[in-house]
Length: 311
Image 1 (cartoon, one colour):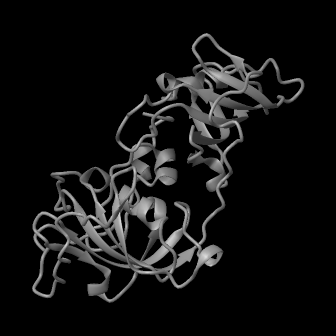
Image 2 (image 1 turned 180 degrees about the horizontal axis):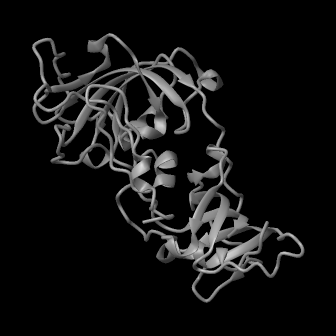
Image 3 (image 1 turned 90 degrees about the vertical axis):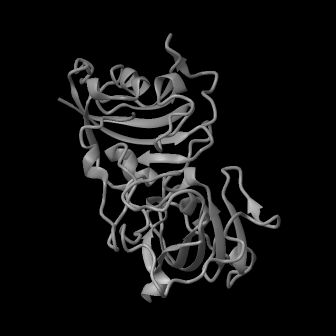
């Protein structure tokens, strides 16, 4: 679990399509940044396969030896190169939207389960709003390119999903038509990998640096577990990957401190004064753990957080 989950259900966003299937929301704030709510629309159970479906490619059952494999387990082949070269090739980020044509098959039986090509209309969605295999794969592409992806179950819907979703290894032929740029995400701090030597440290293992002092005269306004606080924040994994940020929405976030599920962040916020901004290095034991699953980020986390209000 992460930041307060009281509004987690509101994070699931319907995606227009035949069934609007989506991954369950984990947390309201994380959903928008990590893409854990909407996923590709697929045909509903009972209408998965039709007479006019496209046949699966001959290598659908498993990635061939010449397929490129990434550390995550995603495999791909370039079917058609992009219409660009070198520095002219633009790739989407997970905060952009894309226009694509695609067809998807189950590797187990070669059955087609979805195709924008068959519908005659390209799909448009956020790169961070789809299954993990798509989010990673799309960021490897440039407009005009067509890739074939082999997406393992753990990066898709799992081995035996419900509600008619396709299970196991999935195969997609994807053509990237265009990119619609989104909000530019805040860059990772230069010291994101580890707290510097001059950072303050607590007995629990948290480290922090004060980036901006609090407002003079407000020192008596203490943050308590029952306090409702208004925050501005950005959070990264230790490798610099942004996991969430209020800068992406342009809105502050309000939480009750005792409801914080990132214990390390709650501990630091209670040490802050109104208007203060800190950079906080939180060990995995006080965040989500090393391998939390469920779309949550594992390992140590780094937050830039500003205490904008106390009630």
